[in-house]
Image: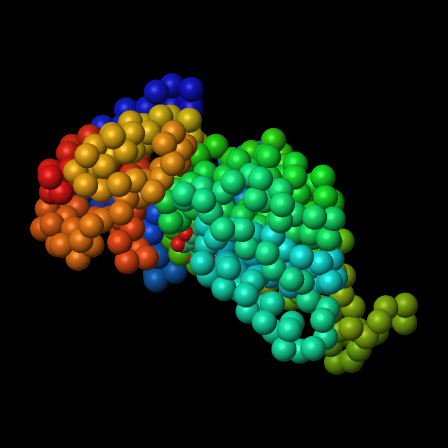
Amino acid sequence: MASDEKPDFDAVRNDFPRATTAAYFDNASSHPLSVHSAAALHRYIDWVTHEVGEPWWPSWAGSRDDAKQLFAELINARPEDIAFARSAVEAESNLLNGMREHLAGGNIVTHDLHYAASLYNYKMREQESACSGRGDGESLRIVKHRDWQIDYRDMERAIDSNTKLVSITLVSNVNGYLSDVKAISDLAHAHGAYLYVDIIQGVGAVPVDVQAMGIDFAACSTFKWLMGVKGFGFLYVRSELQETVVKPTQHCGGLSFNYAPWVEEPDPDVAEYAFTPTPGPSCYEVSYPSYEGAICAQESLKYIQRLGVHNIRNHVRTLTDRLMEELPALGYPAITPKGNESPIVSFTAPDPAETMVKLRNAGVHVAMRYGNKMRIAPSVFNNQEDVSRLLEALA
Ligand SMILES: Cc1ncc(COP(=O)(O)O)c(C=O)c1O
């Protein structure tokens, strides 16, 4: 199916068996696999278990290249700009380490709707730099949200000519707040700073175009809206910044020995240990990426491409719009801004424990975070009956 055709979302439901076991709305925690990804994974597991079929690994290794290509297409990048990553948080951390020289003595601007583990990383780095007494680290500015959204003017006040990096999430995992990435990018670039965007809560569910949005670096893993597994993901580094602004901090490549007994006749023009630094984004990769991750991603990225991100968005919007309309009337005020274009909507629960019991008893899965923040994150397989089940449980 071409992505401009409207998919049959009733049929999509059949691709996700979890849709029949519960009204599962916790996709922002972990998205289920489709039967297609699961089948591909089973084929691989059969192969590694029994070594049947293809007696060598190139066809499986091809899944990695395919996954990279498909991900690049999804975010309008080139495969040459993409490295495999194990985790969004790890990729962001590696990026910061690789940017040490660039960041030294400057400031980093972020906000409190960025992922808490990332903010923790920034605070730890700030603390370590202060404790070391070297004073060569970067200082941190965390912009506080106002009424669960980031005010552009607050970012404007925080970013100055000494800002080296602005770090944000595309979609907040707390309330689904969708950042105006292009505006923040323009602001960062006008001050000579770069922009990192954690895209894990958006990519696959909302349109991402790194070029149009002016994103310099981005990362995600695949277990949320890319419908894959944990421990496998992607890092995007704009090509001009590879190895210049972002240095590799871990190294992995080939080495040859030019001395006996490794070789019969050592070549006098070659060093004893000969190696060439790994070029391109692979310089940020260490050893083998997860084949299981790549195989799932290959299937799910093809699946997302077939459905089309705009169609996914249109489908999910009908569900989140209804939740935004009806839950406040039941006593659950929204902490997601109205008209926000993401698949996550969050509400304050007056009695979180009781709410969770009611939902569990009705077979409805949501996340309750930060005490009383109920996060509901529908995806392609959810339908209006799922929403009715949730609303009726809380009515
Ligand atoms: C916004 C955001 N960033 C990062 C992560 C963690 O991702 P990873 O396991 O790939 O580091 C999460 C997980 O919930 C998240 O919501």
